[in-house]
Length: 185
Image (cartoon, rainbow, N blue to C red; front, side, top):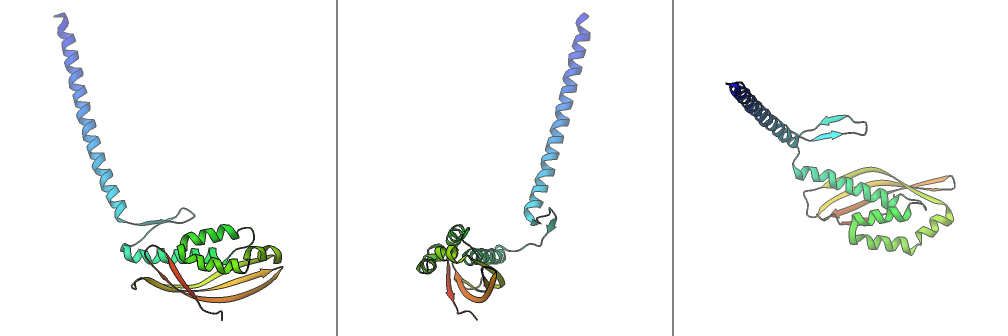
């Protein structure tokens, strides 16, 4: 008889433990289902976060349509690095641009080397800047082609000169770009 109370306490403890385990299992499973549906929803939509932390929801685009923006950014980054520099960032910008354009950049680099661009920047205290006016990318051609219009500004000892350039380009999927220059207008 002494142990009947102890047996009842053990049985009660076992029942409560099993009950808590069942409740925790149900809670875990429902939480897993809830989070998996939330993750699926997050993967099905694109969100844009700006520099100020604002979040914007966008509409769905196919991967091929999204590629156009990637190409535009690629070209913009190349032109900005290749045509805007001074003596302090010349080597870094040219290196970044060469990484974007691949082997085709060797011809362009030879043009800079032929005029000894770095020494010219140092001796004449020149700074180049770029303002991009327009980028057009046609992803329906093989290879991808496009046009970019930009103004390159040359600043030397508080005197500023600008020249406009229009360049045509074609890009393969490996992001190598062929450039053909037209004369400044």
